[in-house]
Amino acid sequence: MDYIIRKISKNEYAILSDFLYEAIFIPQGIEKPPRSIIEQPELQIYIEDFGKADDWCFVVEVKGKIVGAVWVRIMDDYGHIDDETPSFAISLYEEYRNLGIGTALMGTMLQFLRKKGYKQTSLSVQKANYAVRMYRKVGFEIVDENEEEYIMVCRL
Image 1: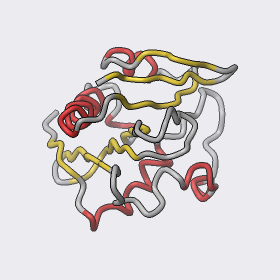
Image 2: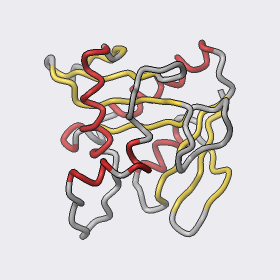
Image 3: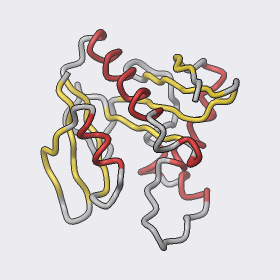
Image 4: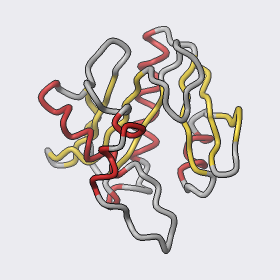
């Protein structure tokens, strides 16, 4: 599948709400929550007022349509490590998953963060999420966990 990875444009920031919703892990057999769930403060932190210092985003396009995004920002979220470590978020529309696009998107962001001089990036992921394997593949390591989630860090 042909795709293009590029930096997001300011006029496209609103699409991050779509990808925030797509990033919510839904275990098999569980009904998707209503889209309004992303209005909760603990989720809004990922996208609200996006575009400040330390906010970076790449999108992936297929045939001119944005089908995925990876973004980071320094925030006090589930995967927060410290105030110098950007938290990592990624999602693709369902039909574009498991094609290697997410891995390429992550690689682009990790390379970008290295060039910017960040020492590491972090994320939180539910243990049952199939993406844990992809995160490990690109260099994330588990540094902490609770009953449901891993906190993972990728040293840059």
